[in-house]
Image (tube, rainbow over all chains, first blue to last red; front, top):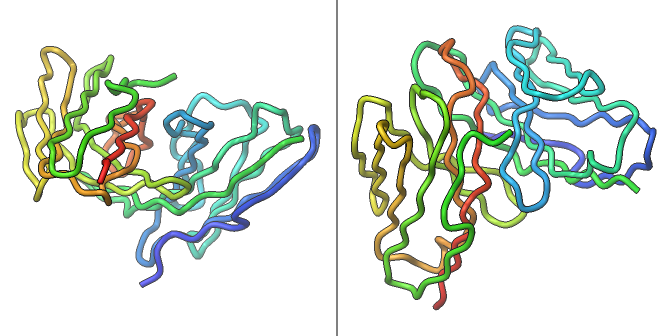
Length: 114
Length: 114
């Protein structure tokens, strides 16, 4: 039973470029959330996708956008990259249902901006 | 912004000792969760405590919640070298149910000395 998988594992970009990160949720999960984790900090919620639509969004600018596909996989796109976008980007999946559902995290994509 | 704040930021103890870390949060919550993150990896869900609960146990873990003080503690008993990791508390960002986005604290980095 595959867990959450993210690609690529590492990425180096320069300021002003655009980047796309990918996530495949755990088998059976239908909801994908994205988080940004700066070095030495806790993860910060970017947004969540369910039924191919953005369901919730954290305090991130419009440069951050996403997509969810019919197979529940998801992409995170960041435009006009800034040095401050350097971070570990984590994807988490869960099953949308009433009541508590723990989130399952992938190992992340390490994005470095030069 | 971070909802939860863990204390201490770092903790180093001998194997076999108990480790206690604390979390404070700012707004009303539905539940509070604790996650563990090994270096360079994703987060792993440890335990959840609901707002109407005061204490919960899971194996060597004990979590308490004091909603009047907006604080929680995580106790790890009989620590092992494998417990070395960062520990984060997390609260739901919204109250809409389902698998809401989470707000994390900055974490406590726990080191277990052999």
